[in-house]
Image (tube, rainbow, N blue to C red):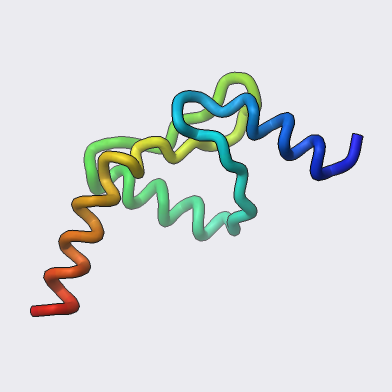
Length: 74
């Protein structure tokens, strides 16, 4: 199986709206975890793949973007 096919296979095992795989550094994953915790959540682990999930972003991202917009526009 090619790496591309393997990645597509793993992506197909996402839960809910999680259907994409991305390459991230450990620091980037930690930043997502910090963001999740700041909004009362946590990254979850997909039980089939063992990979972290960031489904919390659907709920947290609008608030984060709103705060960032207010900061930038004053």
